[in-house]
Length: 88
Image (cartoon, rainbow, N blue to C red):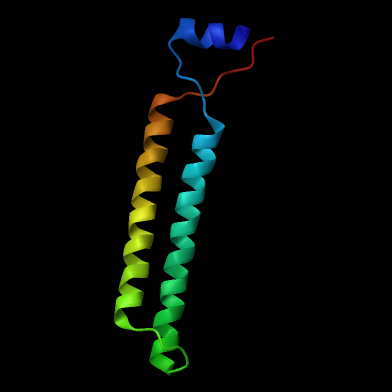
């Protein structure tokens, strides 16, 4: 309760852990989707995986969108919220 009063009085926005976890999850998911797209391309070139161009394209587009959304949310969180300092 005291921390909330300090943050309101000093003009610091509250720090939301769930938002930070969500942005990190989006960025990690985007990186994994990009890796899956790379593996789909390699598999299609070798003839082992029957991945068509549309599936690869949609995977890359989803990865790009998730990465962009995650980075935008991350920038908004970092610019607006500063971490509270420990004051004994």
